[in-house]
Figure 1 (tube, helix red, strand yellow):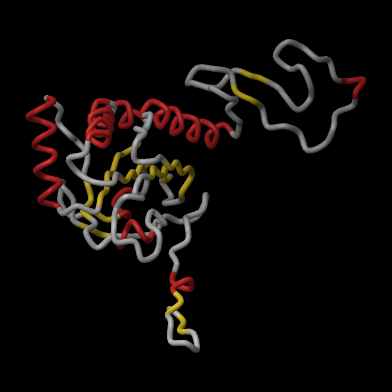
Figure 2 (tube, one colour; figure 1 turned 120 degrees about the vertical axis):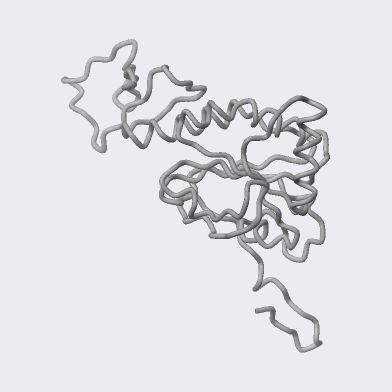
Length: 225
């Protein structure tokens, strides 16, 4: 609860919604969407990219929704669903989806959550406490089949997200978990991966550097399909 100082002024710092942390459970919610009522629990057992945008009928967000829609099948191939959110009403979402279809010839195949009270946005730390605008809502979260947050990205209002990078991110998270390996900078599916480094230094006499293994802590190896 908010505290009150001796001078009668309120202190809302105690009610601040903190940012979610990696590997924490994603805050649960149930809300209306363009595909019926949805709960976060509906996505248990599958990966999920949950992304927020500042408002419907805005140019950067429209470009993102077109890109997400075109990449929908690629996400589905990874057993990954998409779920959008903004603080606009369900009726605004429906009208915007219709506009995207009519003006750009693109069908939006995933649900968009309405959040007019900004309750979900605040639960995910997407808004500052006391904010009366959705201007700061622009985040993407990758949630795993167990409902844990595995990655978070934040973008400003004037820069569109890279949907291909989110696809790469989901692929890398899945491979890293499945094979217990690391992915190097710029990794894409099919590239070599980094073996988990040993916890103890090897015997120098037994170590033989090579092109793929220049040192004991950096060992590239082929990824399993």
